[in-house]
Length: 151
Image (cartoon, rainbow, N blue to C red; front, side, top):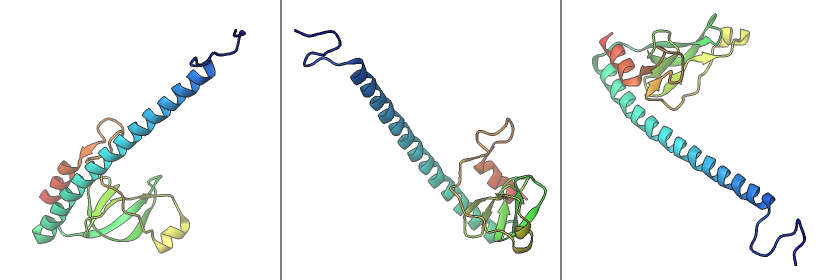
């Protein structure tokens, strides 16, 4: 005979059901995150191919590469970088160097950086620049690269 609150073999308690539900949600979230990461990696691979083709065309007779500068996140200061390449946005917030690396050219304001400059780290290129930003601020990478080549 079972008493209230006890469980019979094969039955589950509300605590067991809640734990099973949490585990299912955790697994679903992990699967979703994995799928997103794979999709972003595939998009970055496509973007890298586009950038490599752009760099080949630009160095063969396109617009000349120029020194790239990083802008402070508040937009007030510009800092030297060791990079040479092309800006992909009119606001000069992203660029590609002559080696085909993609950079977000934003950094924290710094007095020391005014004298020493900054060394931005390359990042994975997206297929859409500014994706998820305010309306009108996103730009297809293909369009940005074509705009630079047209001068």
